[in-house]
Image (cartoon, rainbow, N blue to C red; front, side, top):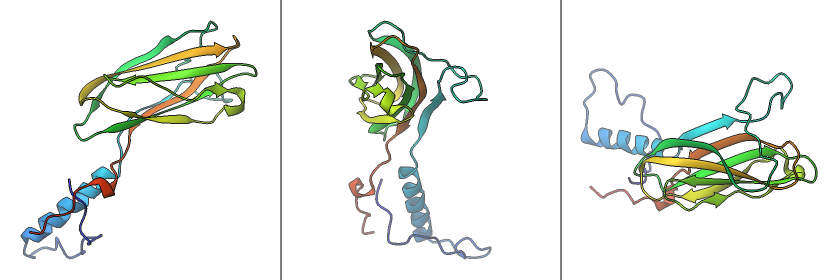
Length: 179
């Protein structure tokens, strides 16, 4: 992929009936599509996981709870397809923790190292913690989400979980050619 040229918009008469089509027109369209694809990351999953009625009148959710005992336990396992150009993904989670309870959420994508999100406590209820995971390989990758109720034994649960690609930075792309 390359950076877009200085042209930020296509002229409205570019595709008018009867107008000649030039090679430069196709290049402009490719550059615009290139830019659009690199600034719109793909969301692989976005889940509402909270306990029943975690918000009054809410719909049923996945009810993913922390176990009362301490220790890592698998809660979600699924596969996603990673495009070849994807380098990193961002994992984010929000949890509900009563006072004097602490929990951890760990995410593994394919062969990448497991990444533990920041500790969740009562003070951070409703606050999303996220982290970037550098991927190893592309194609179908297995995602594993584990949870650890490290302090306390009260009812605690995962509110939301998301996994999305980190958009490419335009500055890291190659300069356009001088055709």
